[in-house]
Length: 384
Length: 222
Image (tube, rainbow over all chains, first blue to last red; front, side, top):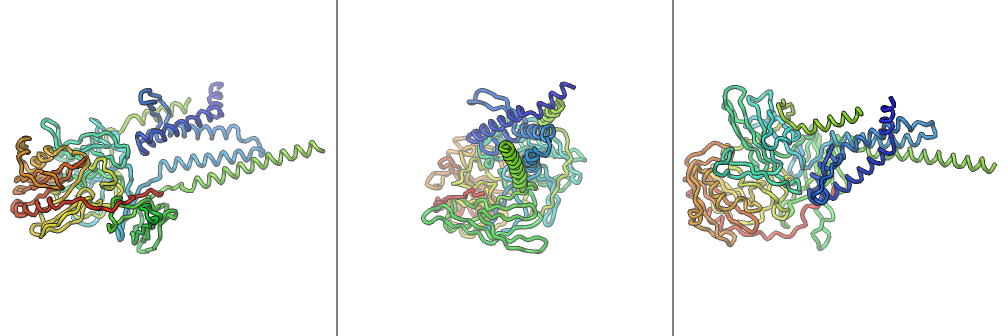
C-alpha cells in the first residue's frame, strides 16, 4: 500500500514534471539540431514521434533517450494525476484547476491530431481539377484489376503495414475480391532500380539497389519486391515496385491483368477543386514573389462555389483546410505554364489550441484575481 | 508500476515490426484511366537527388505533369509531341505508327554509366551484352556538344512491366553530361523505327540547353 502511494505521489509530483519538461527541452534542442543532418521528416520521426531513441552525441557517443511521444504521454498522465490529487483545494484554487484543464485539453488535442489528422498537398495547373491530395512523405501500395474504363475498386496498403519489411522480412497481404495473395518484402525507403549484374537475383532483369536516405525526404524513392501467389493453382509472379517509375507493375493471373503501384499516399476529398486562375506577383526588379493567389472553384454535389486562396487566407471546407503553399516549376521561364500548390490539412482538432489557450488564460486570470482579492483583503484587515 | 509495464509492452509491440498475414480492408474507388500498355517502357532510372534547379520535386507536381525541360529540340517532321510526364522531359509519337514512341529522360549522377545502360537496353531487347570495346566502337552522334554512342538494337522488346514484343527495334543515345545522364530512346516495330533513324539522329543533335529565365522557384509560404 505504501509502495502504491509512493508511486502515485511520484507520478503526480512536480519533480517528475520538471524532469519531463527538461526532457522535452532536450528533445526539442536535439531534434532541431538534427535537422541539419537528417532533415525535417526524419528528425520528427526520430525525436518526436518515437517511444525511445538513441542520440549519437558528436556522432560517436550513444545516448539512449525517451522519445517525444513517450514523454508527452507521461506528461499527460503526470498533469492529470497531479490535478486529481492536488488541484481541488476548494474554490480558492479553482483558477489553477481550470488552467490545468486547459493544458490537458491541448495535450488531448495534440494526441488526436497525431493519430487522426492527415496532411499533404495538391498541385494543379490552371483549368485542372482534382478531388484528391497526396502525402509529401508517406507511401502506399495500390492494388487493383486493370479495367479499360470507368470506376474500379482499389485496395490500399498503407505505409505503416510494410515500412518494416526491409531485407528478408516479409508479410502476406490478402484481398477478399482478388484471386491472389501479395507478399511484400525487401522494402527500401530509398532505392534505385538498375539492371542486375550477372549472378544477382533479379526480377525482370532488375534489382533494387538500396541507397542511403536523402536528407530531403521528398527526394527518396522507395522500392519493394512483390510476390503474387494465386489462390488457386501454382502461379507465382515476382514483381518489383518502385516509386521512380510512372508505370505501374502489371501482372496477369487467371487471364486477367492486375496493376500494383507503390506511390505517395493519397486521400480522396468529398468535393473537387478546380484551379481557375493562378497569379504570381513579383517584387519590382526581383524574382521574389510578393504575392501569389489562386482562384479556385469548389464543386460538391453539383453545386459550385468560387473561392480565392491566397497567402494568409486559406479555404476551409468540411474539415479540410487549403493553404496557398507554393508554386512551380522552379525553373520555369517567363512564358512557361505555372502550377499552384496547396497544402491540404484535415485536422479534426485544429481549433483545440485556441480553445486550450482560452481555458488556460481564463483559469490564470481567475487565479490571479483570487490572489489579488485575497491580498487586498489581508491589507485591509491589517489597516483596520 | 503498472504504467511502466504498459509502456514496456507498448515499446515491445512497437519493436516487433509488421510481419505475418494481414487482410487488406482499405479500399477506394478510382476512375480508371485507360490501362497502361503492357509494353510501356519503364523510365530509365531514378530521379535521385534531383535539384530544384533541374527538375521539380516529383512529389510536388500536379499528377501526370512534367517538369519544365532544361532542353529544347527541333521536332522532326511527322512526329508529334505527346504530353511529357514527370520522368519524360520530351515525349514523342510517330504519326506513321502509334506503337512507336520516343522520349528524352534526364537523370542526376551517372545513372549507372553509359556501358551499363546500353547493355540494359540490349537485355530489354533480348540481346547479349556488349563488351566495352564493342561499345566504344559504336557510331557516335554529337549531342549537346559531346560525342554520344548511338545504339541500334533489334529483337524482342520487353519493358520492365510487360510482355515481350517480337520484331521490335530500339534506337538509343546515352549522353554523360556534367553530373547528369541524358537518355534519348525510341522503340517500336522494326520497320517503323528503322524508317525514323535519320529523324531520331536529327532530334538528338538538335538538343540545346534551354535559356530559361532565372526564377526564384517555389517559395514556401505556409
